[in-house]
Length: 253
Image (tube, rainbow, N blue to C red; front, side):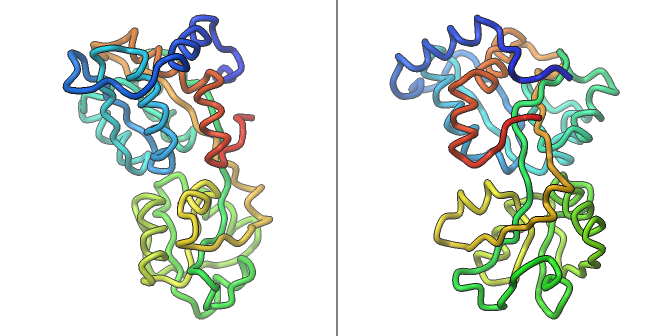
């Protein structure tokens, strides 16, 4: 997998064009570019999509967010995606193994876990050990990237977690905590930042044992191959990388 730093000059030109434009394409475009992306990318990719539309008259970017494993299953079943951005390399590898990517996936960001609790931390959670106690804990299902990361973190810390619920996306975990249905959850640092005052985040030193690397690639068979690659290029270029940094994502290793 090649690194995000190898960005073509064309991508830089694309960003310059996007920077000069204002707003997004209005009305129904002549072409729809369908982008499947991990749920943790929601706010960032909405911003990038607006920039892309602003520099591509007649193009609408249709975003579909869900757990990476669910999105992979949809693409495997023939869903008409043009671009796929995964929250881990393992789920992207499922597509490349079946020849379902039109180019080599490129790592564009990384993310780590954090404990999320309600404002004021009523359960008094201070670290991972407390999650193994008498608390209502919600995590991602093991087949979802955030769930796989949760398992690696727990194994590294030799802590046995007993969640009351396993969700299919990181946004599902966050929702359980923000609505008071759970005392705590394990989500990405970026999700805690995006939730603002609705939650509090507790640093998780053990998260270094489970850094999730995010790859992106055009999907094989897309009818919009050039546009799909240009969207990938925008994510890799400074405009996309800046949006990711602002959201709390770390660079790809």
